[in-house]
Image (cartoon, rainbow, N blue to C red; front, top):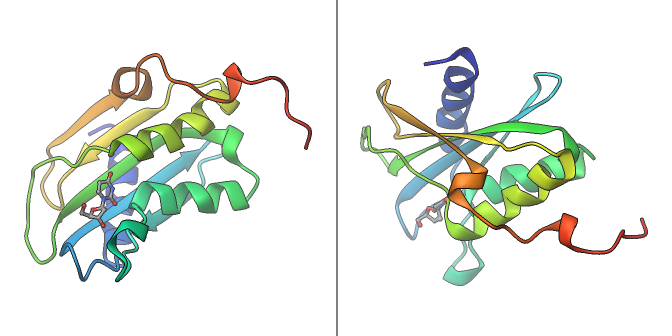
Length: 147
Ligand code: THU
């Protein structure tokens, strides 16, 4: 693994320990690397009203937004598996999360590296957001916003 990929997947695996996923039984962690080396993490956060559940990537991205750092996102690591199961099968971001990640990608003018792994092992896949979400719609398509 590259250093960045290893750091991010390790951090995502740690974050997945904090998943609240009693309905799906599937724990996901996400770790977002900022340009100064800081890593911001999140885990999926489900709800008894199932459709309200938040993915790990979305939770982590909301934290980055709250730090005022959306334009500083460089790369993302994602890890997941059924709770209590060691799995090397890579988890890829859902479609909604790809769109959420695109906000940061366009604001920062970067094609984000997205490192995808299971909950164990050294197997991972690196993609770029432009491949995962081609022809994306984002802030660059809108007129300049106030505030
Ligand atoms: N999940 C994520 O957190 N990220 C993804 O990209 C895919 C799915 C979560 C949502 C739900 O809590 C559980 O995994 C099963 O779908």
